[in-house]
Image 1 (cartoon, rainbow over the protein chains, first blue to last red):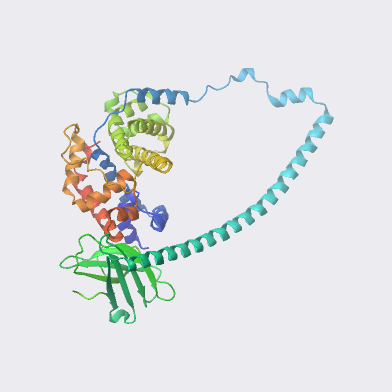
Image 2: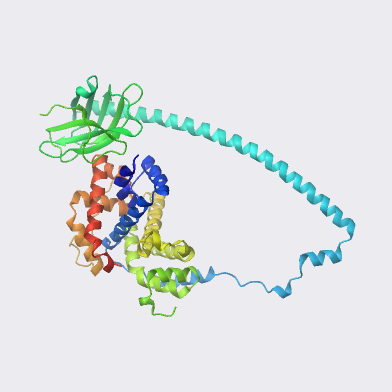
Length: 273
Length: 190
């Protein structure tokens, strides 16, 4: 993502509404970008004022007493009086004969050696555990992808079988002549799925974006997505309530985080009714 | 503390708290207990839970006051962030434990509308409510869902039945507009 794309997402970060990959990437970017940190601080100041929108209410008087009692019990204990403590080394030197000192020194060296051996064995075990954890994570990710695909296919089937299902076909424009797509949605719930094929792969900093264009209104952005190696994708999204029966669905190529208004040539579009 | 508590700046109170000054914490509590309790209660809708969370929040302020850095934001924002995070954590805990919160439930009516004569409106609250009323409903609703219910962008899209990209755009426009509306008045708000 580019700096400008992060700026677009700062308002969502200010109310902690980013999730998944967006949230992770934002955190990493903020570490290295003082300008975004400054902008975020301002947006957080604005968001904090939303607290005033809550209906005024007062806590019970005992809450203050409970807090003050708690912090008093958490105060630092007074330091121990130094004059009552006999120095450890002084006490030992008077009481221990030389032979005991030697035994103690030998025991100390043996203990050190033991610690070093344990530490080395521990380091090897930790490396093995880390490798196993990586493998497990990879398998879990793959399994999750499989699950997501099955869930999407089940959802698409359910939609297609619904008596309220409506279909909108999208055809490739001269930019992507072999591409085609079908948007199936439930007329009642307005939930739908878009099945796409024949789109070229995107650059790492780009993504395709869905647009819903109700007649006579500005395009409304939908989800962003990328295609797999075969040029296919299946995504779900909600049809905007503003969209009536006459609506165009289109797909453009945009920066990875998506755009508020379409900026690139159209790749796929349904016919205007 | 030498000056009257009401005249001491928030930043100075937090500095005194970080040095173990109990009277500074008491002064900060007296100054912000109403707004923070209102916020927590709005999130949890339960007085007992809200009082517990308010107590936890001020204990956190007591322990973490040294972490506050005025170069990174205002003290009010820092306090509100602690209270809101604690309340949302408690909301999620209660929700997962006993499903007290039904995610499918219709969201409550916005409290900043003029209904509800029993609500005593503060001057600051009125300024924010007026600014919120100037936002289009489609921008205001997702912002309030994120702020008071802790929903993410995807959850808001699901709840409102709107496309994800549209939700993002509306939240961005809404908060930017709110910031503009409140910019000149914000000094009087805290």
